[in-house]
Image 1 (tube, rainbow, N blue to C red):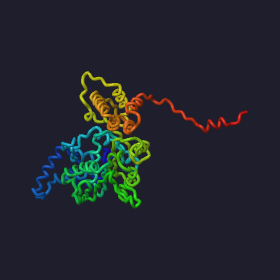
Image 2: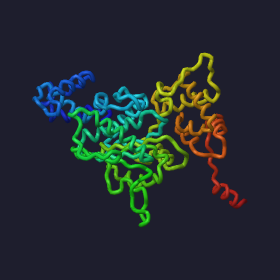
Image 3: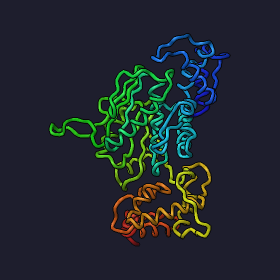
Image 4: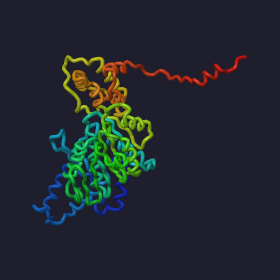
Length: 422
């Protein structure tokens, strides 16, 4: 669970049954340092072969009960203390502190969860994330799946990217989180095949597939490739880089209807934009129009100030295109960031430098799609066109705000002209 008020309600229900197992009959949010100390203390109860050689003290029993119950209902408490990730591909560290982009996603998950609990809406948290590159959404989404699969019984999960190698990369994130959980939070593994599946003793499991090898009926027998999810029910789903999937329409036909309409369902679709008027673009538009089960979240390139920046020289002045982009970020950014947006000089210098590099490599469209300022830019420049990207970009920058909308009724004009005169 993600919103403090929803978590508080879940705590009350748990206390009705389990208060006798907790210290002073209430939950305690142990600081990270205290959790580490307890882990070292608990390790002394086992010999070198992993056999328990002493009983738990009453204090240890209270701690174990607290952690098993509280982590079940509070993702943030669990993640701050137990979720380990590989940062920048080199360093093993805690998921926390979150990047601003990840905190933005967490806030949106909490907002939607609270809204649905208060309104009695039966559905879970289904999101489509349109994002700039490398802002930590895959890592966070995998941690959510790992949390739910290990703390809740009988949860069915699915991880899939566009190609098998990327699916395996995502599953590796999931496995790492599970591997570093302490014994009191890690369910036993019944079956585990690398890059394919893991089954836990609590009845939860996660399958791994990919858009390039979506399972389905044999095409030579009249079947259709891509029936991912057909015949299965998944309550935990993470699909990545959907803008480059083969036959993604089958996801909507085979998988989405089988995600249960229940409060604890979770589905995250995340991708950068790769072209206009493809399935991902159309689904994003439908979601922003409110006609799908999903909620939209755009994460711009400037969402993490510490991520994309370069030290700007003292004598450097931003160019006109850079200033236009900064103005657009100030206007459109608050809708998604829920705060005022003002880009720093270092962010502007990074953007201008990176853009110049992309122009030199004849890849301006790719740059604007990977690091978009707003959703329109993400999709506008990611496809191929007969016009140079620079021309389209300059034309868009010169557009003036719409002043009025006029409708011409041909039927009315014809009827007026055909009307008899006196």
